[in-house]
Length: 104
Image (cartoon, rainbow, N blue to C red):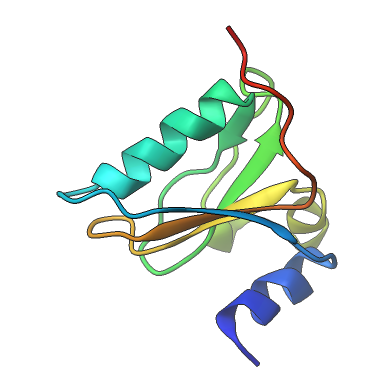
């Protein structure tokens, strides 16, 4: 089972919409992904080495905890995940649905 399959199994759903960020520099890809997600109204979970970060629509509505603190029903409620090497990149945004147009 691949890491993507493990994440999809934990969420109980497929994550067909993906966008990769490979910016160079410490945390550059991670920060670029976070900026893109905020522009598309996604809340981003807390960072935990080697683990996915949860994503939910409604950037101002959610405070998503570290992956190991999320219960199974909380993981299933996520709208996607951010995976990859947060320090060195690349990172991949994996979403359940196509994001809406950017806010402002």
